[in-house]
Structure formats: C-alpha cells, structure tokens
Length: 168
Length: 168
DNA sequence: GACCCTAGATTTCAATTTGCAACTTAAATT
DNA sequence: AATTTAAGTTGCAAATTGAAATCTAGGGTC
Image 1 (tube, rainbow over the protein chains, first blue to last red):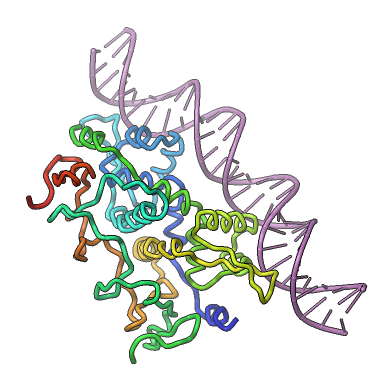
Image 2 (image 1 turned 60 degrees about the horizontal axis):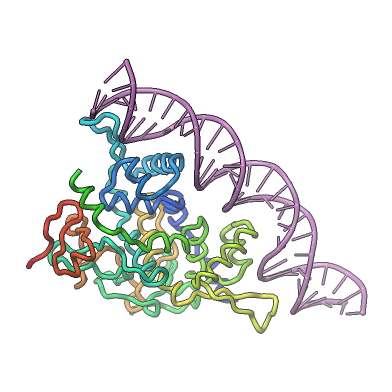
C-alpha cells in the first residue's frame, strides 16, 4: 500500500510509448534486422522475410516517416529504391541485439546466425547488460528506481520503499 | 551483387521472431515496464496504462504463457491476483532499458522518469551499448557480421565482403 | 443475512489492421 | 516490340483491437 502510494507521487514519464510507436509494429524489428544484415531493396525484404507486399510498403513508409530509414533512388537502375539506415536507425542496434540475445537464451534454443563480432579480434560481442556509469555490470539487486526530482535534489530514494540510495 | 550472394550462403537463423512472438504485441513492453516499476495487479495496470480490459487480460495471459510473468493468488485478499516477473521476465530489463533510452534520445525529448540508478552510488545507469567480450564499447564501424560456421572454423569473415575479421 | 463494493475478468459488437492475390506502372532486358 | 523486373497499389476476407456492458467470486458494513 505504502509503496504504491510512493509510486503515485512520482510523475511517470517515459519515452517507451514513443519508441514503441516507431518500432512496436509486428514487422518493424524484422525489417530493421534485415537492413543491418545488408538488405536494402523492397524485393529483398519481401522474399527473405515473407511479409505481405502491402504491409511491407506500409512499414517501410513508417520507418522512413520516423527517420529510421532513408529512401534513395538508385541512379544505375532507376527502378530500384535503396532503403538505408539513418544514424537514428543505427542507434537501435543495442535494442535489437538485446532482444535477439534474450530470444536466443530464453525462447529459441537455436544459435543466432549471422553472429555480430568485434572487428578487432573476431570475437562475438558481449551480452547486452545494464551497467553502472563506469561500466560495472549491474544485476537487478544492484538497481533502484528513483524519482528524477529526488535525484536532481541529490536525495535519490527508492520509489517503492522511500529508502535513500547511494552514499551521501 | 556479390555481397548479397555471400549473404545468401549464410544460413540465417535468428531468435528475433521468437522474441517478438513473446514481446512484439503492442502493449507487452508497457505492461513489462509497469511490473518493473512495482505494479502487479490487474486494476493497477488498467488504470495506469489505460489499456482496454479485454486486451489487458489477453496480454497478461500471453505473458504468463510465455513464462515472463507468474500468476499468484493473494492469500490475504482472495479476489486479488498478483502478477510477478519471472527470471525470464527480469532478463528483459536490458532490452526494455535500451528501447527506453533510444526513445528518450531520438523520439521524445522528455527525460524518462523514474530513473534507473546504481544502488551503490545512486547514479543513473550507463547507456546500453554493444560491447566487446572484454567490455570495450563498440561502434558500428567496429562490428562485423560473420557466419557462425566460419567463426567456428576460426575463419571469421564479413558476410558482405568476405573480408577476414580479426587477427590470425 | 441483505446490501453494496471491489478485483479480475468475459462478452458483444464496431472499427481497425492484417494478409493474400491480382493488378499497375515505370524502367530495364532480350 | 515483347518480356521481365522493381516497387508498389487495390480489393476483399479474416483476424485483431478497443470501448462498454456484463459477470462472478470475494469482502465490508450495517
């Protein structure tokens, strides 16, 4: 009772709805993954993903509208359109990889392929984790949700328990 | 032309479809976020998210079916049901945070609240990044996609260019 | 015990979204 | 000139979503 009370005093603001409006549709992440793997044309997406053509057209348009992909005509073959990742689209890579790693570990027991590796040593990238500002991995027990107002007042306290967080 | 040819030689296997089957519905991440913030009852989800009751019931059922939430009756008030995160559900935190951070940076310009902080020092967690096995942050330019078969044969090569990756 | 309230759904029905198949249009190829 | 290819669009049936009303079991109050 008290904890929920505390929670309600926190103004909940979250960009998750906005993020989901851009990427929450069923095929959006699949299309994004395909672009990360080098696909860029309508027919490529259609044949490799097996998505309906009208839905694909609609999703590509949405991704372009949200600034995640850019539409470029190909000068050497003017029938073709190239869909390219923008910087904003590229910034979704950690989310995509996190989701894929979760799926590999907890849903499908099949190893993901292709594998994303470090170009320097050819080793697969690390599991995506929540980390402290200095890079230390953090588990759920090391984490607290605090109200931004309390944080800015240098009085971070857990929104459930009210308990102060961190050294003073 | 050559790069797509190379790509087609790679057996594409991906747990992304499986992950999206569990979490790809419109409200799933919103419900998950609510549980991470301490909500656990039907009415709490309904009033704070504003989701239709039938859809909420259906989504909770799906999340339970996928082993992301667990359903517990409350002994002290037998009308109530408590939905709790499982270990599998908790493992989605990095994905959720990555998506939220992306939204904060690229979509909504409003600061996220509440803030996830390190319990040790009360500082907000780091941005979710793709990192090397040793924790070094990696940008897109430091990454390559390689066929798992090539990786296991200790011959990692970029699936587009065929270029060998890493020192030999 | 009669009454009302609460939590967690289920049902009904309209509106929207999805998906398949066929068609279109412009550009390239034979 | 005829064919093929790339990237869509259109029409229509099926599935999904959402708002509102209803339902059921349990609690609280007098």
